[in-house]
Length: 131
Image (cartoon, rainbow, N blue to C red):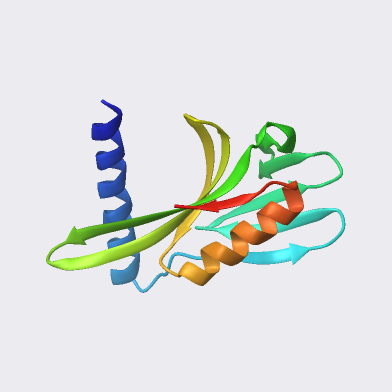
């Protein structure tokens, strides 16, 4: 069941990536602001705020996760054959447990994912893993 859901999710991601590219949009994860108190990222059109003082990760007013609950910052590589062309993308996640995570965003630019994950790792004090 989980394999089927994962495969479905990968297909949806590939479709959205292809649609964004066709529309002239690119998947971006970028650092907007970084200081002693917070890290602000723009990821796939939404703003993610890591508040170091309060130990929270929010999107708008919504609490996504407390930094104490995060076990690692993960970069997940995906590759899929779509219409005869290989599509690649990287997903940045905040892992809470084996089956629980918060998806920060995805990008077709490997360096963007690495920079975002490194900054998230520094802001949360968690290790960065790539697979």
